[in-house]
Length: 159
Image (tube, rainbow, N blue to C red; front, side, top):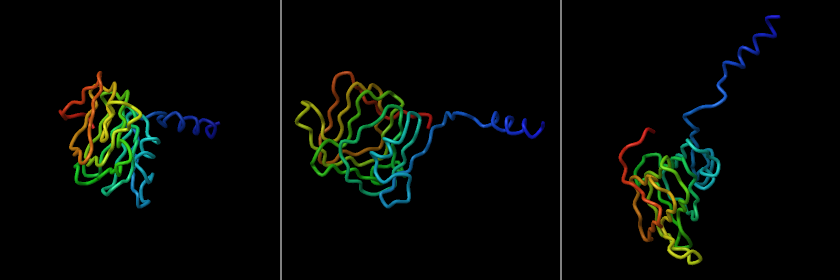
């Protein structure tokens, strides 16, 4: 009888959820969980962190998800560069809540998408009040915030 109860007790002690979120590592060299920033964001859920290895990433039209922290491994703009090569917008941040953070990137060479008037090349932010953009540099592109959006300067957060 004790053999039947032991697996049940062990199962009850295993937590079914975690509050901390998962860490997704992005490394184009293959030593992370995924190879691209977009794949990291696609894999992540709210409360997860997507940590990007230092280097240059040639990506565009990256759609940020609400509640995700996206940051370079050193947290400074000189660590990781995202370069859209003048082909499209680098980031789309639409309907992102205040727990959404982009930290430590050089956002470069984004070109506004002409199919959507008023969209920025480096980053388009729409209906995302309080999204945090920290330690980022914008080089060779434009940035636009549509009505209803108000990125705030970094004031600290609990991660």
